[in-house]
Image (cartoon, rainbow, N blue to C red):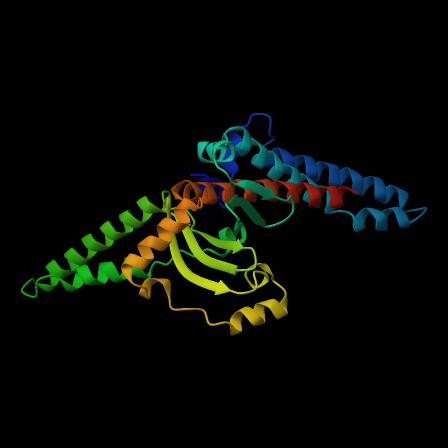
Length: 299
């Protein structure tokens, strides 16, 4: 899973960088910085007998070199990860074989997919912001563990109960840790299906674990209400009757609506593509951001 990259980025990178022989060690970088700083300070002290302005200029940018070096180190790390992590097959297969056109603007968080189906115009959008906003809910795991603890036989001694509880807690922790690396961040999809002069259907869904899970289904007479982030459009959309929760609809109707979406390309292939592409784009945008910040610092 590409989400490993995100975990690696937030973890200490000393070991990862040690495997890259071309990258200087932290100690070497620190020594060189201290050495350069000491030499610069001595030269400034010698010149201060005549003028204090060089010292002021040196102090004004004292941290710049350190910031720039740290940014360069981060860029090198991201480039190293990219070189050793090929483009996922799910992305290549989707780009080559699906009817969707991918619109990915550099510097923007949103990714937009578009296609036509008969006289319908279909748009699917998602955002890399989901990666930063995602907080795994551990309540279900905690509740499951509590339920198992409640099932301990009442006739057991207090010592047996404590031992059983510890075993169950250890098993639960192991299950959570084992699933942490496998679980992909769910991606929120905004699906809009438009027909000329007939308004639009707006479907809110999740792409998670290779499946599309429909959460809400809306109808708007004005398609702009499904697309626009303008405050007036958002307010108008909120005033529109939203319909019942999708999960409360007749089960046969739910199944038929899911098939309706599948015919239009909202399929398992899309459910696999979206999380992988979200992580791929986030890494690309993060590297570009690092380079932009370094360019500003160095200017």
